[in-house]
Length: 243
Image 1 (cartoon, rainbow, N blue to C red):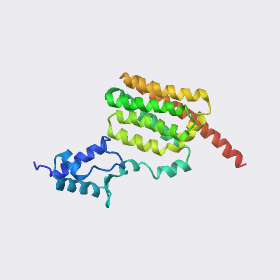
Image 2: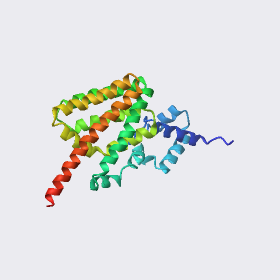
Image 3: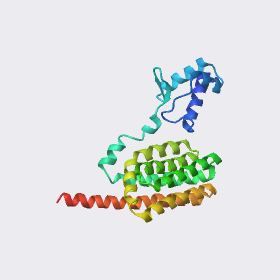
Image 4: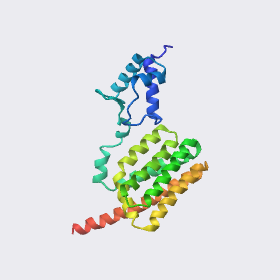
């Protein structure tokens, strides 16, 4: 059996850091001297590994600016879906159905696999989400909501789930913003959303996988129900304007 080249081993290590979230899209890699010391390899081997990852489109070299993780993994779930969502509102239900399957399973896995650091991160995201819901900054509320769900996805410790969730939530951001905008007009809905998020968090904190799955599924079901109502309202307005 032929031993792998050192540069290939280094490239795989950098890839692993990208997959497990230690290196995120847009992050700049540490300077060569620092990174080679961390990995215990020569700068020549590190440089060769970086060149391999650049050639594969996973890293991007910027003249005078260093090496950066590209957004290739996340952006692959973008266009042409963005245009389809704009032109075919019915596809939103399919997206929410997929989100239901993905996020419910992520919450279930997070309840079993989350580390103490993961649970602390999810909790802090919940705290910030509660603070944002007490204000009127809709964009901050949306961002905090997305951050909470992304923290859970990453706590599931499944690299595919983490990347797909990031892509899906970013793709649906405009629709989530609109849905939240309407819901925030109803005081009872505001508190209902918060309690749904708290229920998911409590189940993860207590390591109760079944309850985490059920709580996440219930939350997405609530969002789906309200989006369906919005879409029906849109359809009626479109019909009226066309007559």
